[in-house]
Length: 608
Image 1 (cartoon, rainbow, N blue to C red):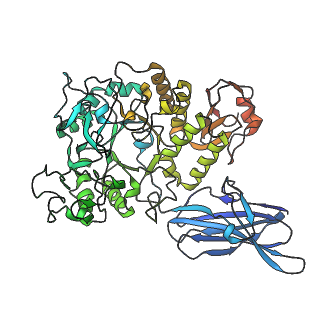
Image 2 (cartoon, helix red, strand yellow; image 1 turned 45 degrees about the vertical axis):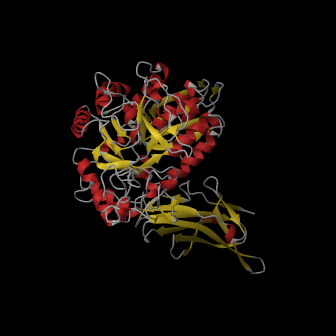
Image 3 (spheres, rainbow, N blue to C red; image 1 turned 90 degrees about the horizontal axis):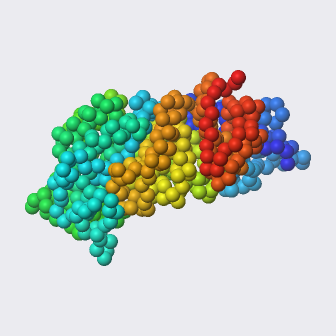
C-alpha cells in the first residue's frame, strides 16, 4: 500500500485548525498516494442532516484538496473520506478513511460501519468574555468555611437543629440517619464580614476575583438546597452587609461571581415547604393550589416527586415552566435583583441539568448588563456533550462564555502521579483545543480542586513539589485560574465533607502558600499566559507548555518524575506545528538539568 494520510492537526490537511464559525469555509487536504486510487471524496454530515459527498480535486504527488462552507447552521459536523479505487481489470471498489480514535491521524477501513468520523465544531458566534475576566485570577470561597468576621466570633443567626463546632480546628462531619439522610447540619460560622476582613490576605496572595459558593437562604451549610432565591442566608449576614462586601471588593479591584443553582431547590424551601416552616398553604408540598406547584413533578402527590439524582432533599424544578423561567431571568426576576447590586457574573451549577433554552434565557438577561460573564459546570468535553439524550449547544454562541476545566484537573493528577505520559496530556488537550471554539477554550475556568473534589494535596499524596507543578499547570494552560480556598494553605482532605474544612488561619503552610503565590504572580505579570497562543511539546519524560504571540514566547517545562532529567531538544515532539524550531529549542534547552518534580521557565523572542 502506498501512502495514505490525513491529520486535521496539520495545516496542510485542514485549515483553519479547530472549530469553524458558521458561514466560514475550511480547506481539506488528503494524501492518497496509493496505487489504484482514482478519486477521493470528502463525506461530511451536519448532525441530523443529509451528508455531502464532495469530489476532491487532484493535486501533485497524490494529494487531493477541496473546500467546504459550513452553511448548514451551528452544531457538530462529522466527516470521513471515501477512496474510490480502479483496479487493473477496471473494477471499482471503495475504501474508507476515518479517525483512528487516538491522535489526529486516521486509518483505512474496508467497511463504512468500521470507519470512525472526525468532528468539526461549528459555532454561531465567538463568545468574547469581558476583558476583566481574561485577566482574572479567581479564588473560590465556601462561605461557611472561610472566616468569621464578627469581633467576638459569635455565629450569626444559628439555625434550628444544627450544631456548631467547639473548635475551628475540628474536622467537619455529618450526623446522618440509617438511610444516609443528614439529620443535623454543621456550621463553623464563616460570613460576609469574614470575607471582607480577609481582603488584604487575598490581595497578598495575588487573586483579584472571587467565586462564591451559594449564599442564598438554605437549610444546609453548602446551600445547594436553596430555600429562598431572593434572600441571603442570615447566618452569612444581611443583604446590606452583602452589598457592602460587594462595594468594598470592587473598590479594591476585585470581581465577584455567584453560584446559580437553578436545577433544583431544597425540600425545606418556601417553594416546596416540606415541613410547613413557611406557613400553612405555602409551597407545592403543602397545597396543590400553590403557585409553585407547577414547578415540580409529582409522581404520587405529595411524597413521590422527581428529585435531583434521587436525593429527596433536592426536589427537581421543571425548567420548562414559564413561570419559573420568568422568576429566574425575567425583567424583575432573581438574576435582575442580584445583578443590579453589582455582581460580575454567574457560575451555573450542573449546567447539564439545564435545558439549552433556559441557559439562553439566563445569558440574554446578563447581556443587558455590561461586562458580565456566564460560566457552566461541565465535567467533560463540552463540545460533544449529550445530556438526557440531547446534544448540548451551550458553547456554540449566546449560551455559556466558558465551562469549568475539570479535564485539566484530571490530567494534572494523572500526569503528576505518573499514571499517564506527557504525550497523553498533549494528545488530550490538543483534541480539546480542536473541539472548542477558540474563545470558549480561553474562557475555561481552570481548577485543580473544588468543593466537589478531593483536596489536591491529598490527591498528590502530600508531595509539595508536585503541588507546585499542579499550580504551574493551572496558570500556564489557556483559561482563567481558580484556587479553591485553602489549597494554597496546605489543607488536605478526601471527599465531602473532608474537603470542606475550615481555613487554617494562623496555621497556613508557608511552603504551599509560597509556591502558589509564585505561580500566580507569573501569570499576572506575563500577558502571554493570559491570552497567548498555546501549544504543547512532549518527550518521554517531560511536558512543555508553550504560550506565544508573533514575536515572543514563554515556555514552561515540567518534570513529573522523581529523578533529575537532562534535556535533549531532539527528544521533543508536538502534535501541531509550533513556532519554535528544533534548532531554537536546542539553543534554549539543550543540556538543561530539571530536578526531580521540578520545572524550568524560559521567556524570550521566537527567533534570535
